[in-house]
Amino acid sequence: MNSIPFLRLPFLVIQDVVSMMCPFELIHLAKVSKRSKRIVKAILDTQFHKKYHVDVYISEDYGTAIKNGKNSWYYMYTSRRIPTNYLLTEQTVLGSTIVFLQNFTLNKLDDFQRICDLCHDLFGDFKGIDINMDNTDNQSIIDFLRTKQESFEDCEVCSISERGDDVKHFLENLEITRNVSISAQISEDININLPENVENSIFIQHSKFIKLEQFLALKSKQISLNSTKFTNQDIRSILMSWMATESHLNLERLRIAFNSTSTEYILQNIPIEDGDEFQMDARLVELRRAPRGPDIRREDGKKARVIL
Image 1 (tube, one colour):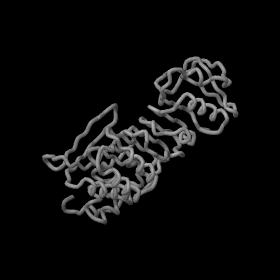
Image 2: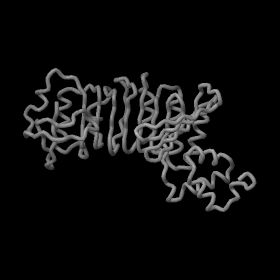
Image 3: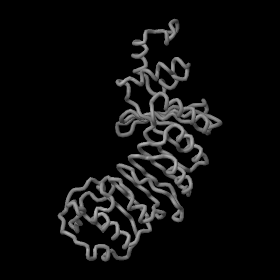
Image 4: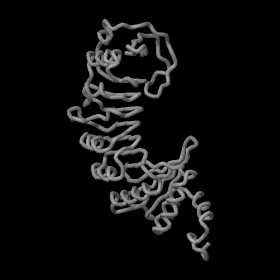
């Protein structure tokens, strides 16, 4: 192989070799030259090799996560000193292989942008964003990602410190189309426009900033809000709006945490039916089975179990 430059081999031979490479090897080959990048991209663009998708991954380190089914390869940049300037680790969890490549850099943001550019060129649009906002580069990262694409399917946003302004900047500049999960600390007095057209699910941990009219505009199938400021009257209004087919027409599952000393008023004078216990898919709720209890009926005939 040393006597025959790899890229001078017949294309079918190159294709066979490239098809056996892991994402790290594909990235490193693409970095060799413009020609090698074109060849890698051409092979990855074939229908047979459309097997990877890429997420943006921001923690203490910055980088991308290239995924193929259960397996993931994290190509990261870190400002923490590493003895050899890079560190490769691999672990297997529940049958899934996770490989981390940490590269030492003095400028995480610049190198992050470069690896994003390369991965975007090779693998196509990013699918999701997983971002820990306990850093100082959030808005720069968001602004950069918007230059690559304006919408993503999924996001997971977290923080330990208060990051309401960064979450607001995130939601104002990037559209999330399928799943939103936000567990970042958000103060209750901030004004944030929630994405109304998220198709599948919305989960928000610190939800006291959400107003009733904002909630009624959501169109997701599954909604879970922790720590809201909603009152009994608000919950009553939500149920009545659903029954009148005024909101949440696609709703399949709803969970709202709110403070109340008594919930008897919520269903007062609302027509209810006695419902039997049934098995539940506990993706958004802790209960495995829904107990016997009141059902409410929508104008179009659809029923919902109310558990208070």
